[in-house]
Length: 431
Image (cartoon, rainbow, N blue to C red):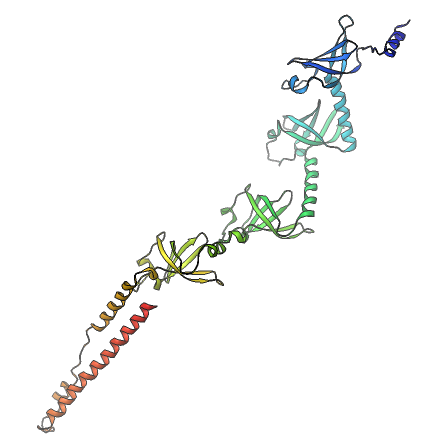
């Protein structure tokens, strides 16, 4: 019987002959750091050394293979004496990965691999056992970026071309662009006014902030950043900051989105109304001093005005005579203007009532006790009157009446003036 006929007879009886170069399948029965043992059946055991598995020294056989795994390998040496077959999985993986790369090129499918090195021209990505070169322009990084940051990362890529039958060129950028296109399509199909997003600040201008919403940019105008006045957006946020925003309006055809950041919940006026009411006594901090009064901070974003007439129980030349910036004082809320969103405060309203009365009385005393100059109206006519023209018996009588009547009129006039000033001072204090 010939050798060929004998092998055929063995196969027909369930006994398969293994020859060098055959691709065989078997079950892993043991794994060590340097070797894997495989049961090939027919009382044959296959062994795979680590160097026949991979060229990557960081690979652990115990991580890659588990007892019970079914694997395929190429028989590189067969020993008929002890039934040991030396196997190699690296070669079969190379064949399989090469076929995978060719199919990916033909079908425009996406591959995934680890970036193992970088050079001036680009990076090398290992997909199974195949090395795929990705030019710097196809990494998806900006021109001035350091491509070394990609080393060690796992990336998705497309096969652009296969040169000379073996050299493979790929693109990470192409995958990123396709993913971005999908994200944009999904974004525009779900966007609606009022929807909230957690975006990332991408760019700052003098008039607003551009925010990346996940492949699509929207703009927050500076007036929508805060309820306070924002002179320059860079004083409020920085590039890279996360920002909670919501859609105010959008134009899908033009790709424009207007965003807002400030909300009714963060509106200082709404917060003020929820926590304060008319006649409340609160502690406030003087924020600025004006000729007509002082502004004091009630809560962040809400200042109340303390008019100069409401600072003290005496007339002030300037609010700075009593108050200074940064000073904390107690004040009473005496006015809330809903339409203008203004608050009026009073320190004077908290002063004791008797103190207010004393001040008014002192002002009245100052007016009534003020000296008034008297003009001797009767003496001058007496001296100027010629003696010979005035009868001696009647002159004294007429002169006396004039002298006595003039002071009475003067006193009456002064009394009325004093009373008027007291009344005026009293009304001013009451106000």
